Image (cartoon, rainbow, N blue to C red; front, top):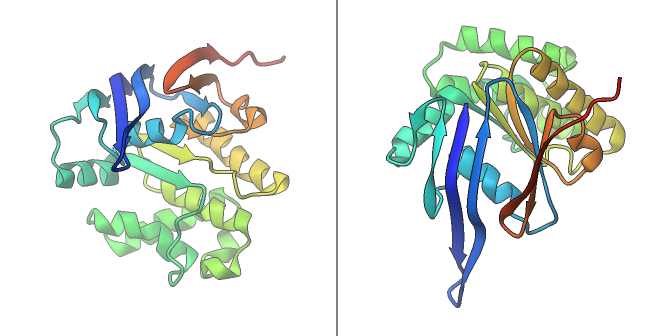
Length: 228
């Protein structure tokens, strides 16, 4: 589902060039739940942004669902993201003036879906995250955990091929974090491909594979041993 070859990413602050990713090779198969971990500054979120087409690598190539993405224009990348990818961010990224269901349907409307169908999918997704009674609430009327579950619902409502999550539990208490991770586990059991950045090893172990970054390189890439 994802093949990344020799991914490098550098940033220039005007005085020097900082190489954050120094040559990453990784393959993620359909249906895998992969966690990316590492210390602050290791390049976790930067790698996620390259794999999810939210940023362009300085060098290297990302292939998503057999699609070569290096030559895609900005408009083509945007369309590919809308049609194939779902995103969850640590700051929820909800539009404050829209209700929960309206936030969920925005990406579907942007790709041309009829509003009636989008609303049906939004209601189904809200039910799956346990918030069917909160569809008309604004983000300000929801707790942090509820807002993040709306964000997760938005990410999977239209059944994307891959869900990318960047520190989805960073701003949540342990109870809310568990609710969000339970949703990810249910999605994984249903066959969804999930790539999650986290700084919590406890949460990373819920995945089936952990990629550890160190100084912009893959330090380890291991399957998670599940206790029976």
